[in-house]
Structure formats: C-alpha cells, structure tokens
Image (cartoon, rainbow, N blue to C red; front, side, top):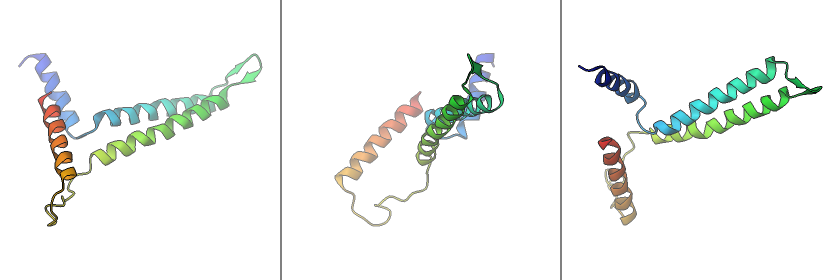
Length: 115
C-alpha cells in the first residue's frame, strides 16, 4: 500500500467520527485557539509600547474570538443532530416544502460523499 493512500485512509478514519459540518468544527476550534492564545498573552505578557499597556486589548480581543467560536460550535452541533423522525414517519402527509428540503438534502449528501 503506497504511503499516500495510507495517509489518506488514516485521515479519513480520524475524521469519520466528526461526522458532518467539519468546516464549522474547524472554524470553532480555530477561534478557540486564537482566543485562548490572545487571552493568555494579554493576561501574562507585559505589553507596554511607549508607556501604554496593550494587555487589555488582547484580553478583549481574545474574549471576542472565544464568543465568535460559540457560533461555530452551535452550527457544528446542530448539523450533527441525527435520529429525528420525519413528519411522514409520524403519520403526517408530506408537503411540497418537505419534498424540496429532502431533495436538496439528498443532493448535498451525494455531492459530499462523491468527494
């Protein structure tokens, strides 16, 4: 087995547990890392330039990054909700909007699985 194929299989095996919405997950983790780093630098590093302290700026910026990451976590979590029953399974008659949403979802899913 070539090394490239082995690496690709390893990456796919690691990412399979993440399920859907990997972009939202990457965004949330990146914002958390940037925000945490900015918070730590702002709190613990002496950042004085020409007599002005810039530590507070980094603390506020870090907090803003961490709050922004919350949107990514919500998107990732809500995109991974499985097991919801459809209205048809509950005995409701499907509407045109339900059929349209189902068709779009299938197209996205088949496009994603073809990659």
